[in-house]
Image (cartoon, rainbow, N blue to C red):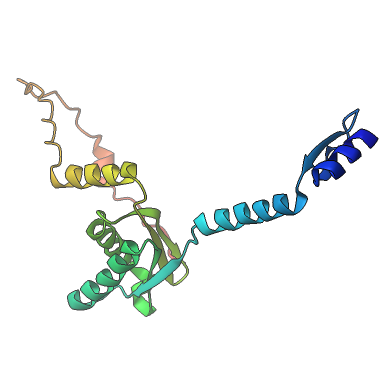
Length: 193
């Protein structure tokens, strides 16, 4: 240990204990101030490379007009092009709550309209008076290829398979006549409460 301290003083470096639990303890000769500075630079650089996920929200109504829909869609496109996720919310009021399929169809339509820019990360879910769906931008080539395949599959659906044909029966099967008492007696009606 004394030899290591003497070497550190001669080289004008610091003696830093790297593994104190090891036997014998492991030490390293280094400039500790420079070491701390480089670690801080690495940490700052890694923080700079991190991407903050921003979730933008776009609110719609189930009975939205076509022009208003195009305006909202343009906003969603702008958000996706900027690399942000988009939470699309359909707000139901009054009787609209009894027709959630309208909102579901609207969200599906919006997802299909922006499939080249983003994909549906979270499918449409009803949450009280609102229905939400989250769209995320395409990050890599894989999600873009999947989106293109989905568009092509919906544009060119597979031809329906022909139904198997059964040979027509040559003679109708004999049926038994119903018993006479079942045909004459009507069923009693259930008592109403």
